[in-house]
Image (cartoon, rainbow, N blue to C red):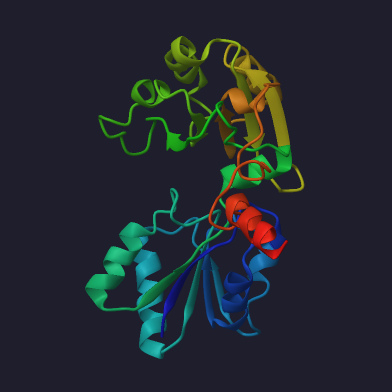
Length: 262
């Protein structure tokens, strides 16, 4: 048997990968993060399958269910939200499975920051504006941040930021990032991107805390921040520039061939 860690995507049921859905459709055991994975996705499990919401379960209980499936020789679809490599808590599960010699595989999913950019019809990297995207979080009730990954250090980059798990830490974010981005830096508060009740608040570093308070958002929101979310002038990239040559579009060689043919 194999345990498949599957990224279900950001919320819309049709944003799961074809591979992920096919595995859910055939696995006799489906363990899913119920608070964040759409019910429609796990309904694809085969008739008679064990389908269990792991939201109220702790790690030992989850591993025990996987061990039981292993003993029965049954594949397990372990379904996480977004992409499991980002705040998916799969490393600790895989460590347990390694110790138990239970095989597993990982199926990627659409991460929330990519889904948010798509919904906003925004590119996160614009020529000469931002060429780096930093996915991070701030220190709150969960594990502390590594000392070299503090928001103050990351903010010095002035890159596009996707800040997870921090909607209750907006005052800290504002105070820390304002010296680097400016109080008028565009901010997008993305609540449940791609879900039916999704909400996007366009605001600024200065005004985001008040806007979030008015909207009464306290969880399941992503903070997207950077110049790319504003009305900025940027030059076209060289990728499709007629005067720019690369290995797949070499104007010089084509010109020589045309001259030789003439």
